[in-house]
Length: 112
Image 1 (cartoon, rainbow, N blue to C red):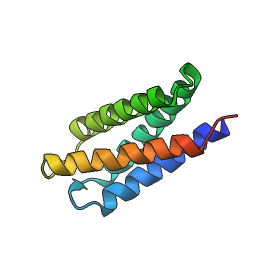
Image 2: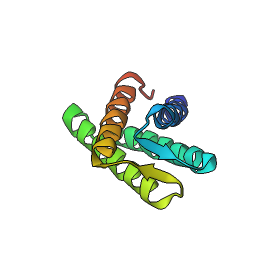
Image 3: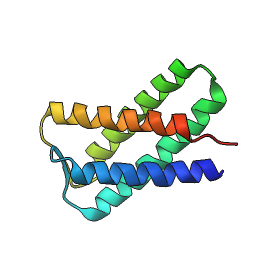
Image 4: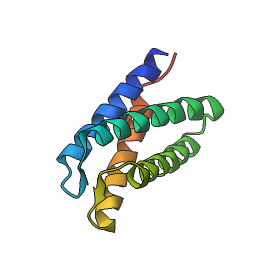
């Protein structure tokens, strides 16, 4: 349980910092950015926990995490207000960074 909460807080904070420092992806409203980062952190931490329980194969877990990261961030960017993308290359770069951070967090933080 402690690992789950730590992953939620860590993923939400990292996504918030990535969105703030990335000039290609912008969020107009602070409330929308905070809500989106918290939702993404909760869903990605839940996905990491469930994928570790379902399978022990590392490649399958990585594929599940990449698909979940793409899905949740795509949903957040399209359905929450104030998210702006400047081109498809910026969107792809942002998803690449977010997926690599999700995989790294999953690799280092384990549930007991």
